[in-house]
Image (tube, rainbow, N blue to C red; front, side):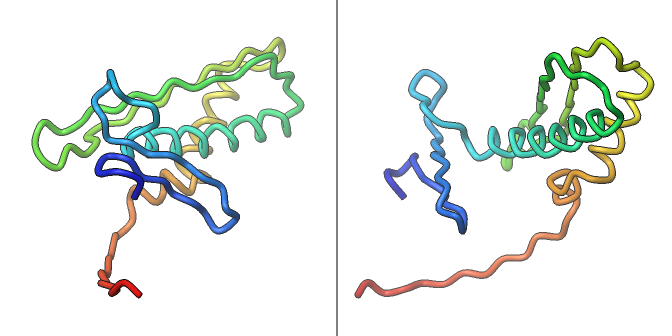
Length: 129
């Protein structure tokens, strides 16, 4: 914890992600819910791009737009998430890209599969040394 509304997460390799819960006008990092959309988009994007390259398609550009609709109450979880994959390629077809995107999201993306998982938790209090 850096402050009441600021946190950082570090993975096993030491990579750092800053997180904050400030209002938009004071925001300098993603919120946990922003990070969830970013993780989903990043995971699905990697698989989609790699599959298109495996098909020997030229990729001039690729980007993804992710939008989530949240529950009005508490908790404000995502009720719906929409991913829009955009590929700029001179030799790819709509049909093959649609199939690759479906495979990426529905079969290969670990984050998408994790959103369907059972979540368990534990708690622990440690005394200062």
